[in-house]
Amino acid sequence: MTTDAAALAVAAALEAEKVPYIIVGGYSSNTHGIPRSTKDVDIVVSTTAHRFPDLLKHLGPEWRCDPQLSFETNTGTVREILELKGSALKIEIFALSDDEHDQARFARRIQKPFTNQNVWFPTAEDVIIWKLRWARPKDIEDVRNVILVQERIGTLDWPYIRGWCGKHRTTARLEEVLASLPKRR
Image (cartoon, rainbow, N blue to C red; front, side, top):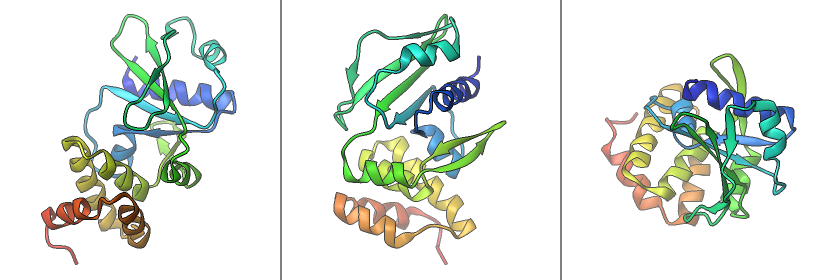
């Protein structure tokens, strides 16, 4: 099973269980920017209930849930890991945090086509804001690529982006990214 097919299978299982979700991480920047390879799928769900037995019912016996809950160190949220048996593929599912921007990002989520079905993603603005907070080299490159693609379309809400960057103290990081881009109109 490909990573894309696995992402779609888990999204369909979440939909079947009526669990609100967004696909974040590399997949979210790929949908708004220039695609890059990614080895895992990150999903945020807005439920605290342990729903994996029901998800596994939809996914089938080739999937397993790591029985050990873990915590994501940057956000402090609970993380569960789904694994496709016999492969290195992992799907990390995070509980929606109480962080003000995490809540806003989830509330603003949008459905976008992904291969043969619509799935939920954060907006381009929220991908930029979130990845500026993480600020790993691949995140900064994702921010650059999302801005490059979205500015061509002309749809970015800069007051929204700048407002959150001010709250998160990432404005200088945003300005560095903007200065590194080809001349903007």
